Image (cartoon, rainbow, N blue to C red; front, top):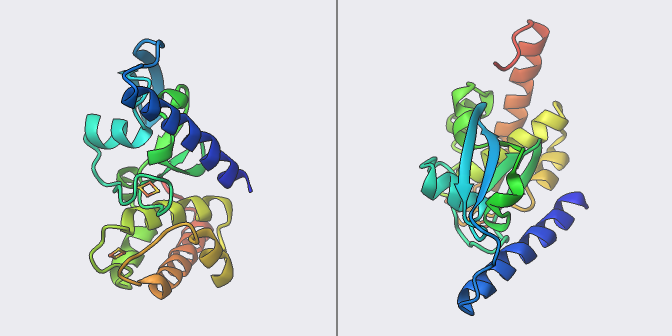
Length: 192
Ligand code: FES
Ligand code: FES
């Protein structure tokens, strides 16, 4: 599965950088300049080789919608969309994102995606800490499959963990958002 292969590769990179830090042997690669697009805005940034994408977006740039539950690629709460695919931002190095396009939950909210309203309407959250990760993963699903079955929604969200047990509500919310997107598309009103 491509996503899983990506997770393994990214995780090794992050673990190698952390190991080198712990050993006091910082990578010799200097602070690097990267260009990337985040939520349709272009950025020129200098990043440390051991910064994760999550750290860059959340801690450095202050886009705090994404959440870090586990910091080890197990929960999906830090999910962002990179070049159209959902990735675990705690497992991806920022320096690997040079030239890429990143979409976060803030961008999804700003474009008025129907997932936001559907999640609120169907109470697909309790504490809400996992919710941004679910919304971002669902957005990536609807981008590639505008009319998913319930089983396909469950499969797409299988990597996201909710400690509050809101799982059934996600399927309802995603299916409703998909239906609304279909109506908007038929009426000639796509997402901005
Ligand atoms: S915080 Fe990234 S997968 Fe859990
Ligand atoms: S709503 Fe609390 S962890 Fe999911």
